[in-house]
Amino acid sequence: MFTGLIEHVGKVSSIVTDAAGCTLRIADSAPILGDCNIGDSIAVNGACLTVVEFSKDEQGGWFTVWLANETLDRTDLGELKVGDGVNLERAMGGHGRFGGHFVQAHVDGTATIVERIPDGDSLRLTFQLPEPTPERPSLLPFVITKGYIAVDGASLTITGVNDAERTFSLMLIKHTQEKITLSKKPIGAKVNVEVEMVGKYIQKSVVAALGGGDDSNGLRGLIEKVVEDVLKKRGL
Image (tube, rainbow, N blue to C red; front, side, top):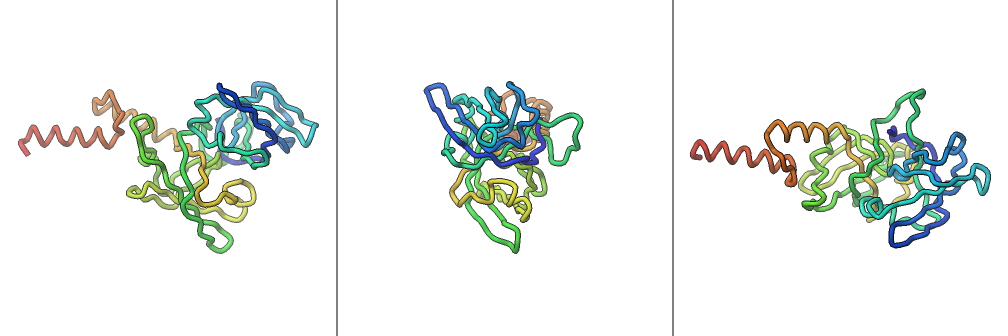
């Protein structure tokens, strides 16, 4: 489990790709490696990855993670290049304060930056979610104004939602801009998105309560079917 409070920004120092996935080495990572062990989980741009090798002393500290094809397919990590910065967060310790929101670092999908608007020292960003498919239903039911969302692993508050355009907006204060990579990404760049898991549990519970065993069309489709059945029974 993670909090979505980014601890450090590391740098991709090498990428080795093969048919089964790829290996990333993240350099400039010494600040988060003090208590690191092989097998530990570190969220890289919001994706929970397992440390398979590390050094606390060489080249400012580095660690290596393996990305399977499933991870590459669901996230934007396959688009990283050597030299890119990445947001890093260690798994949450039971002894610390909890400051963000519950983040699993299990990325639900990606979104694309479609607007950047400076607002004084702050920065307003708008993201568009992809067209839903049967394999990847829309995330919009879980995106609500003033709710939380993890973008590239950072816990952020949603300032606006436009269902018709499949967009949501955020505002980054100056401090946040300086601590994460998101403020440096241009229009057209992809980001990793994880919606709040509580919403997903609620959706599944509601679907079950309504007697829907197959939620391939999403909760909206199920509710529409229930309404259609009621109207049909009443002859309307």
